[in-house]
Length: 100
Image (cartoon, rainbow, N blue to C red; front, top):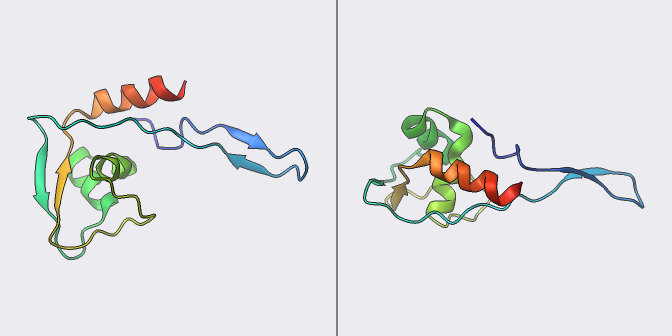
């Protein structure tokens, strides 16, 4: 499976010669009747939920994107409803199309 950095390009700043990764554009994730909804609990984190529901902790960004969780943190506030998108293969295909 593709990691979130698969589509980042390594760029070099001309003036400093320092290397950095380009931004990745994430697809919009539309709600589906097959999606699952869960209420977050104390200790839940995006990477742990991704491992539980997708078998791959690197897919945490799918849950974050679907739920508009834009803070740069894996942590989740307890007691909020989260949508766990079901069609991961479509999301990954969309990610690839957008960033190729």
